[in-house]
Amino acid sequence: MRIGINLIKGEIQTNEPKDLIVGIDLGTTNSLVGYIHPKYGDTRIVQDEAGDNKLVPSIVHFEPDGSVTVGTQARAQLVSDPTRTIYSVKRLMGKSYKDLIDHKDYFGYQIIDNDKDELVKIRVDDRFFTPIELSAMILRQLKQRAEKALNREVLKAVITVPAYFNDSQRQATRDAGKLAGLEVLRIVNEPTAASLAYGIGLQPDEVKTVAVYDLGGGTFDVSILHIENGVFEVLATNGDTFLGGDDFDRLIINQWTTDNKLPLKRFTSDAYKSIQQAMRLNAEEAKIHLSQHPNYISSTEQGQFNLSRQQFEEMIQPLVAKTIGCCKAALEDAKLTTANIDEVVMVGGSTRIPYVKQSVASFFGKAVHDNLNPDEVVALGAAIQADILAGNQKDMLLLDVTPLSVGVETIGELMDVIVPRNSRIPIRAARQYTTQVDGQANMKIAVYQGERDLVKNNRKLGEFDLKGIPSMPAGLPKVEIAFIINADGIMQVRAKELRSGVEQSITVQPQYGLTEEEMGQMLLESIQNAAADMQVRSLQEAINEGSQLLATAQRFISQQTAYLSPTEIADTQTYMNTLNEVLTSQNKDLIHQHIEALNEFTRPFAERVMDKAVAQAMKGKQV
Ligand code: ADP
Ligand code: MG
Image (cartoon, rainbow, N blue to C red; front, side):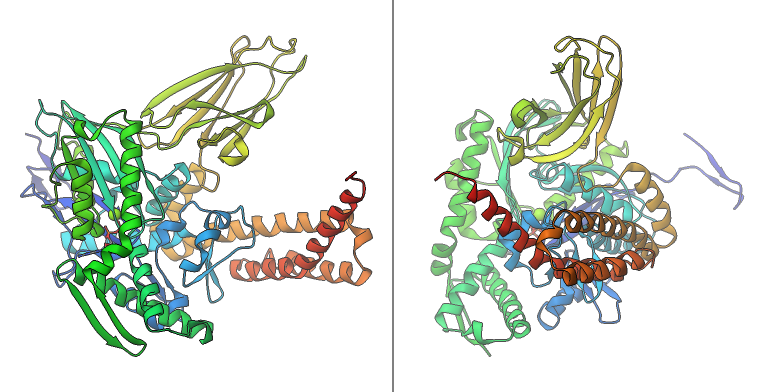
C-alpha cells in the first residue's frame, strides 16, 4: 500500500485518489459523458442536476447580448431564434465551405463562404466562430456538468468520433477538447467504444467477429471488428457522414409540406426558417412516436401533420437500403460474408426504429444486440476506454484502422498510396523515391488523403521541402518517405536522403489545424480565461486571412489594370486601405466585416476579368 501525506492539511492519505478520466460522446445531435464510478466501479452516464436527463443536445445558442447557452435550453431556441442557434456543429468540423455546398440549405444559420477552400466559420450577428470554438463550448458544458455531478475537477477525457472522420476532423475534435480545458488522452472511434460497452471480447479466450451498426442523428457508420484475446481490431469501416435521423425528419417535413400544400416560398426568409425549424421538431416527435405506435396525428398552425408507421417506413426505405449497402461494402473490404459475423451491435438513437432493426437483423441473418440504450453505448464504451487508459484495467489493447488511404504526390499529379485505407494503426510504412533533374537539391513532398488516382481529387494534408540534397545526377539520390501513424491517427511524415542522411519531417496537422505550440499556448490561456483564449486564435486567423486577401487584391489590380477603370482601381484601393488599417484593430469581427466588404466589392470585377480572359483564350482557338 502507498501512503501519502498531505503536508498542507497535515493529513495522512492511505489511498491516493485515482485519476478520473471521463469518456465523451461528442455527437452531431446529442452529447454525453460517461465514467466509471470511482467507488462502485460500474459504468455510468452523467445526469443533469434534476437527475432525469443524460443527453445534452449538441446545440449552442447566442443571446443578442452575446451570452451563450448550451444544450436543452439552446435547443428550445431553434424555433424562436434560428439564426443564432447553432446545431450539427460536428458536420462542420474540419470542413471547408466547398465541402458543404451541397448541404448548405440544411443549416438555419449563416455559414461564411468567403474563401471556399478555407475552414468554414459561422456568423452570428457580427461575431464569427469556428466549429472548433463551438464544439469547445459544448465540451466545456459537458465538463462542468460532470464536475458538478462528480463533485471533483475533471481535466482528462477520451473523446469519440465517427470511424469515417479524417485526420482534419480528428485533430479539430482534439483541438476543441483542449480549448475546453481538457487533456484529450485519446480520440476513439465510436464503433470501437460501442463494442466495449457491450463487453464483447472481455473474456480473455473469446474470439469473435462483430458488426457495429451506428445510425445517429447525422452520421451513419458500420464497422467490422475482430476480437481475439482481448484485442479489438477494426477490420473495416464504411458509412456515410451525411445520413441519419435528421434525414428521416426532413422526409417527414417534405411529406407534410406536400400534404398541406404549404406555400413556403411566400414567407419571408426568417419566417420560413422558423417554420422549417418548428416542423423539424414536430417531425422528430412523430418519428419517435412511431417507434412505439402505428399512427401519429397532430394539428398545428400550419396544418394537419399526420403519419402512419407504414408511410414512414416506405419513406425511409431507400435510406435504410443505403445503410445496408454500406454494410455489404464493409464486409467486402474485410473479405467476409454475413455468415462470418458472430454479433451485431446497434448504436445510435435512430436504431430504435423497428424497421431499421428488422432490416439490419434480416441482412445479417441474426438477432441484433439492442439491450443497452443505443444513444448511451458510445459514451459508456468511451468511459471503459478511459478507465483502461487510466491503468485500471490491465491487458487491454485497442487497434484501429486508417479510414482513408494516405500517400504522396508523384509525377503527373498522381497519388502514390503509402498507407492503404483500412490499414491497422499504429503503423509505419515507407517507400523510396529519387530526383528528376541532375543536381536537384530540393524535393517537394506533398501529402494527400483519399482513394482517387489524381491528387487533385484527394484531400491535401500538408506539404514540405526536403532541402539540401547533395549534388548528384538525377536518379541517384535515395529519398525514403516514411509515414508514422500513432494510435490516435495523428501522422508524422519523414523524408530522408539515405546516401547523405539529410532529413526533414512534419507532423501532419491536418490543413486547418493548429500547431502543437499554438495549442499549448491556448490551453494555458483557456484555463485562465476561456473567452479571451478563443479571441486570440480567431483574431490571428482573421489577420492572416486579411493579409492574404490584400496580397491577392494587390496582385489582381496590377495584373489586370487594362480591364479596370481608374475609378474601380481607386475604389478598390480605398477598400484595401481600410482593411489594412483594421488589421491592427485587435477586433476580429471588424476585420471579417472588411474582408467581406472587399470581397463583395471586387467580386464583379473578378468575374468580368475572368470572362474576358476566357474570351481572349477562345479567340486564339481553332474550332
Ligand atoms: P448522434 O450520434 O448523431 O448525436 P444519437 O445517437 O443521439 O445521435 O441519435 C439521435 C437521433 O436518434 C435523432 O435523429 C433522434 O431523432 C433519433 N431518435 C432518438 N430516439 C428515437 C426513437 N425512439 N425513434 C426513432 N428515432 C429516434
Ligand atoms: Mg452517435
